[in-house]
Image (cartoon, rainbow, N blue to C red):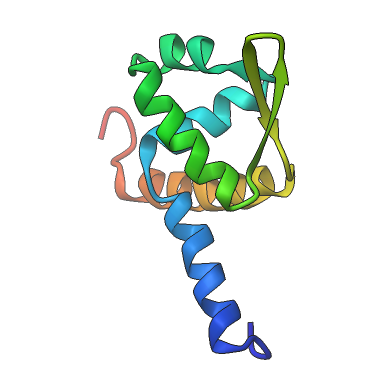
Length: 107
C-alpha cells in the first residue's frame, strides 16, 4: 500500500466497502460453489431478486463477479478467486479472536 496514489487508495477503500455488507458476502460464498443465476441466489439468500441484482451489480462494478447471459437468464460467477483468500484470512482472524474470548466448556 505504501506506493499507492490517493486515487488508488480510494479504489482499495471502495473494494473493501463492496465486501462490507453481509448479503454480498453470502452471495460471494454461494458463488464459491459455482455459477448461479439471480433467482437461485435470491432463494438461497432469502432475498428478493431485485435486492440480489442490486448487490450483484455493485460486486460486478468492483470486479468481484462476472455475468454471462444465456438465453433469458444471466449467470454470475466469481471474477477473481483471490477474494476468497482475503475473506478466509479475515474470517480466520475473527474466528480466532472469538475463540479466545469464549470460556472453555465446563469452566
